[in-house]
Image 1 (spheres, rainbow, N blue to C red):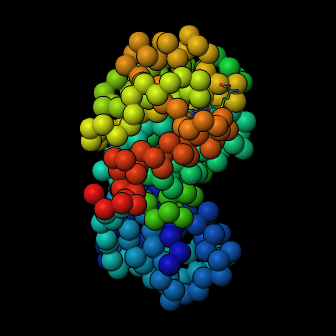
Image 2: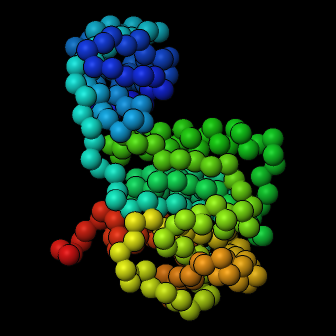
Length: 244
Ligand code: SAH
């Protein structure tokens, strides 16, 4: 069933007029009057609706069912990827949402290419669209938070309350393996193409971060981000390959 995000209050047994972007999307999908579709607005529920009118510019649906979804991970993952080339960063966002991230905090570290301040708001809008599209696709009805990019030092302070804090570095010994005790929140820093500087790793360690090494090969930043998301869900979250 096609699923659409709408930034509107959704109420059972009401008619809803849809925003232009959703009407366009419905037409692209060649939906028709009588078809059933689903909507979500980030409140954790999916709303099933029937299309009662569909024109080129406007559409109306009747909301007939509301279902609270139960597919959010018990593990709260805050992913803190350093800014990298924009297509690769987009990929990190898309995959992190699919893999159940709770919050994404883009990080400006020593070796990241600076994003000029006039571009930040358009980039944030672009990332928000990726998050929404990824929620639509992956059947999430809770929308992960997105923060504005922050400096490395501030990122260390932003996740003070996370139970597990890790910095990914291919050049440091495993400081503390992931799966020692069950935890319910984790924050992970991923470096840019040029990696983290030694002083950044040391500063993170001084703030309670443990270094983590993902095997013996150097991964691209986007691969490392996707890999650690999957590992976190597997160790502490909701991807269970082995019966516990
Ligand atoms: N040329 C850089 C490589 C950076 S890879 C360097 O030598 O440091 C980009 C980021 O991905 C790294 O900063 C790190 O956070 C993560 N990463 C890549 N491979 C990794 C590995 N094997 N273990 C842990 N983190 C890794």
